[in-house]
Image 1 (cartoon, rainbow, N blue to C red):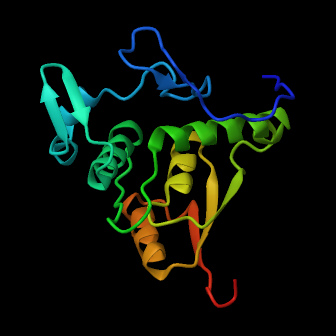
Image 2 (spheres, rainbow, N blue to C red):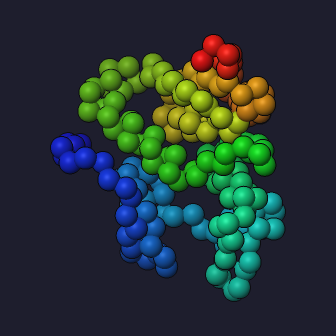
Amino acid sequence: MAHSAAPLRSKKRQRVEGAGEAVPKFHPRSPYRLCPPDFAALAKENAAFARECRVEGQHVSLDWTRPQTLRALSAALLRKDFGLSVEIPEDRLCPSVPSRVDYLCHVRELLQDFAIAQSFPNRVLGLDVGVGASCVFPLLGHRLFNWRFVGSEKDAESMEVARQNVQRNDLQSVVRLVSVDPQQS
């Protein structure tokens, strides 16, 4: 796929045919491009997410200002769409799963443009500096594209949860986490 020389711009909201609400314009290979999350189905499958929803018939409302709602949504999407079990602590950043998937799709496209992904399909090694507690880029990168990752983190609590997330998903052989001394950075 050819790239234009235009600079990257912030994502604009656009309508997707068949969708009731505008969704961000995602990468063509993102699973969320034509099939945004179905909150009603997700609430039926995930009790923690269901507790954060207000259901009126087939319409589901979310309070986007509540951090626990965002954590429940992210954990539910990671579980349903990628088979990942992830703890997202209350006092840590919560990843937006569709945007992280979109980012990884763009990275893959860049690797393909430079023939890296084709030349070394099982040898792509990503580096995530500041992996955070969720460890979302390494976990998703492996699930989506079979990439390996090294992730670094200087916060001891985030590193411990990230290690647990990697172990919980049995990905220790493809995701290596390295603690960074905050005094040395």
